Length: 284
Image (cartoon, rainbow, N blue to C red):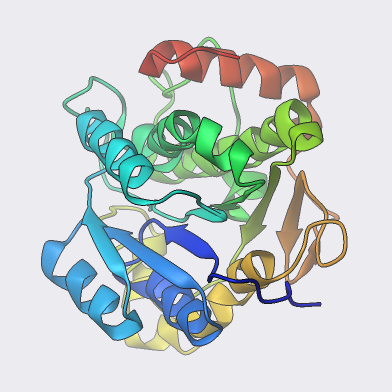
């Protein structure tokens, strides 16, 4: 059931919206009447998508936490409410590298930056009774393993292992958001969009680059619009009726097979506290 229209359109912020799933979701939600705010790394592509959907746009590179802090301040100033925050930015990257902030780049891009953005906007999200949506991946189940003593895979790095762990962290972040704040009106969900024909993995040295970037591999992938369908559903429907807050979804349903660590409530709590420490925000 769609959320009934109100006096003003719902404000939906989508990160990673200059291409792929994020751009497709922006177009679909704009068609549904949402006020869509497009956030991306590439200035030209971000502005183009925003022009298509008639929305505002902001440029931020999530491998720079200073960009994330600036983005949060700009969003907070620009919008009296934010109804949906879609933490969609992320990706499978290449060889091990450190960001300017000193963190492994896959960890920062996929988990730490969206954690910081959400934390900085938390007061506004709570006041808006917002939904926070994380684009995760089935890679969490296949490759993810969270070791709180080796959070950035210093001892056992590989591109797909770092990505899988970051996507597991998206799920744990979702469950902890729900635990901490659902009784105050905030809802959260994570989802796997499926194998989607986008630029995913283009910067990676992983074997998955071959699947996503060659012509034959793309024959087995779905469209960005199909990949965006769950994100759009979460944004357009009420939690509790259209979807369950705190859950992780695959193929439009709560996932039955998940990484065993995904259900560890103590691990979710410890990840939250450590992430807050790393980015310098209150753990709450």
